[in-house]
Length: 393
Ligand code: NAD
Ligand code: MG
Image 1: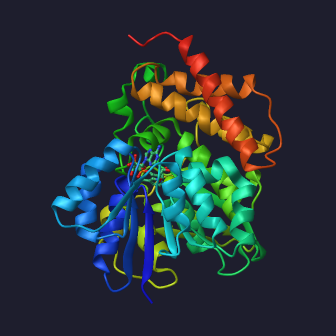
Image 2: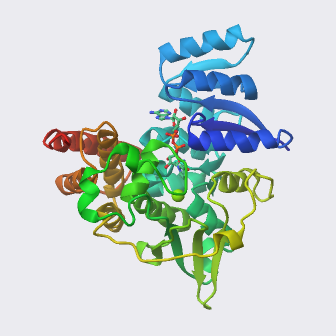
């Protein structure tokens, strides 16, 4: 039976890769809804190619523009806008599968709505899970939703875990690999001067700007440790981070008998996306087979928590529990945006997140409202701290 997809964040990097895989298998997948924030023209192109029933954008003006262009081209796609419209397409009967590929906290409510309506969810939007943790996982369980990780590390772990009962198969540890990003070997004292362009130039992966900066600070790996904790129900001290600059081993699972299972492949998000889209089948993703002779060497090292303070901050937030992860995530989103806008320097990202975590009191994450309040408070606190920091030269 064909899967009917809602693709939240279709105009982003994950959105592009998803549509690339979808286009290879018109017999398996149809598109019910596509969503974009501001990039109306790209959404129009996607709509003309994939003919979804609904397209969602961020605001009324973009919606009007998209609608006009679609009608002029003879398209019947209905255009809606705003946060409620995202929730509507995520829980609509028109789709059975929701690809969560919005960046940041904006993806939480529609992704949660997909969980509450028992969809099959392909999760790229790690921030949604980092923020809401148990609330999200409970919604998945209570409503019979199926959660398939798209993040390459988590998809690798998922592939290396025993099929049923994730944690009852003698698993001792999860080992998340990390490339170390563009600044793995850069002289630490020069990190204060790096530019957004340098931070966004990832050695192995091509991604959106926010996750690229997160990879440069290694906050991305910190968020992924939290993501792994919730997805696979393991405490933080059984989730290791291992630097592996080639990004060929996408992560590993170690077992009580000494076995270590790894998933390998070229660093291309179409592999985990195709795996999750077709699961449990395997389909062509367009990614070339891995040539290990060409790769020749695989290197590994321990992460450096001094060079990458964001990684340590994320571990700390996970250990503290409650809304600390939501606070960390929100402060990081504001700090990364300020860095991309050249308002603060690179090292001020960690400084801001640390200061926000210290300034705000942690509390149990008892409901979505509590999480959203913590998110809003952290954003306000981050803005206050950033206002007090000097503009980089
Ligand atoms: P991106 O910036 O390329 O795309 C983001 C998408 O979200 C766009 O379609 C944009 O229109 C939409 N969007 C942005 N702000 C929005 C808002 N306020 N409301 C509604 N929609 C909004 O990002 P990306 O690199 O594709 O990453 C998307 C998610 O996937 C992130 O959570 C990221 O951490 C995760 N992820 C990405 C990669 C990767 O290789 N790019 C790998 C693993 C995980
Ligand atoms: Mg990842």
